Amino acid sequence: MSPNSLTPGSVRSAAALNEQIRALWLRAGGSLSSQEREEYELLVVKWAAAIRGEIIEAA
Image: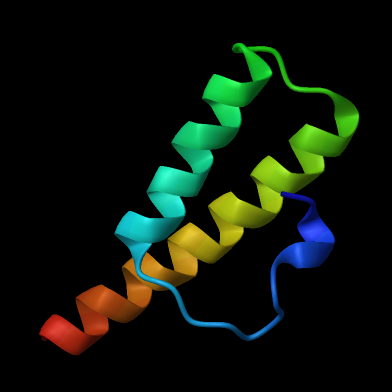
């Protein structure tokens, strides 16, 4: 999956994003290319936002 395939503003659960992050690392074999690093960084930012949203929603 390329960073461009991640829809801006799309809402995904932290668990779903975590699975994508894990899958990326598995596909990459533990060493990310520059393109994979960009995808990873985008996923982590989206994951952190999802975590914050889930915490606020739970409160």
